Amino acid sequence: MAQAAILHRVAAARARTSTGAWPAAAAAVGTLAAVLVLARQARPVVEAAAWSWRFAEQAPTTIIGPIGTARLAGWALLVAALVAGWRVAAAFGAGVAVVAELVVLVTGVRDHAAPGWHLLLAVVVAVPLCGSLLPATGGGREQRPLPGRFWAAAVAIGLCAALSAAGTPLVAERFGGTVAISSIPVARIGFGALALIALFSLVAVSALPAAVRHRAVVLLATVAALLATTQLGYDEAFMSMIGHPVLRDQPAMALALAAVAATVVLTLGTLAVLLLSRPRLPR
Image (tube, rainbow, N blue to C red; front, side):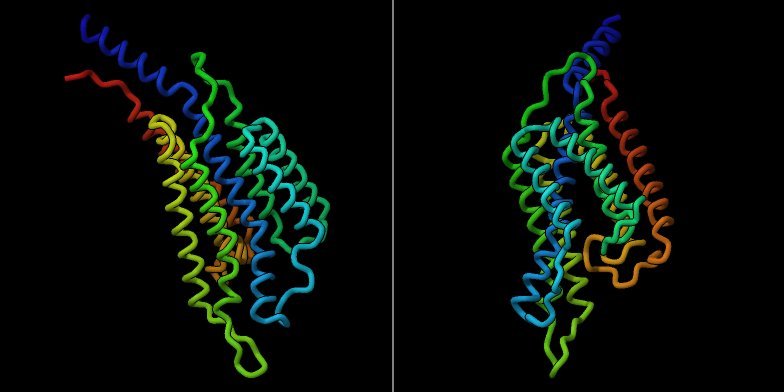
């Protein structure tokens, strides 16, 4: 009887602690994903500026076009809403982005990006942000604002993702009348940027409460698996690391593999969280 009572109290205490942990984790990961997507939209601008600085004749005449400009402005507004704490507005904006990218894909509007890539990015942001609005079970308290260390790490993530686009023009060299680019330094810059993004992501998650932190790691790993697998099918989808993706001509297969990888990671991670959350009798 005594052990049963103790077990019940421990379970109740853990339930109170973890109430609303999944929505809070989704809010954190959705915020990091939104910052990352904003940086992705800014990469062509950064790269064009670097080309103009080093080799003016190599600078593109059209940087991102009307659609790219709309994407950059839209994601900037969405991140600004998150910074201001307007989570409902940000989730709504992410949903609008999904619909807009779906329209671009279905109507076949001329776009320089690979088909479906920006739609995937919008979905990656919209799903956690909308999930963060779900009510917490058990009458949990309202979500707390994200801490300052989290936002500092998020800014670092955005800078790494955006500024690394300048790597290609910075390592380019002129040989007579031609400009040569070595793929090895470019790949090193890409991998280095991804390593820093992963590091700062962990720093951001470490600033969250323990119950939220574990779940945020699971969601973060799911997003990472999704984007990393997708890279196999899209030419320079996120970083200039893979010159010729193995599934370049089969992006649909890359998306299918990405969905499977993300599902496996999410399932295993959720099971791990549930096992760690099981109450144990004190010795």
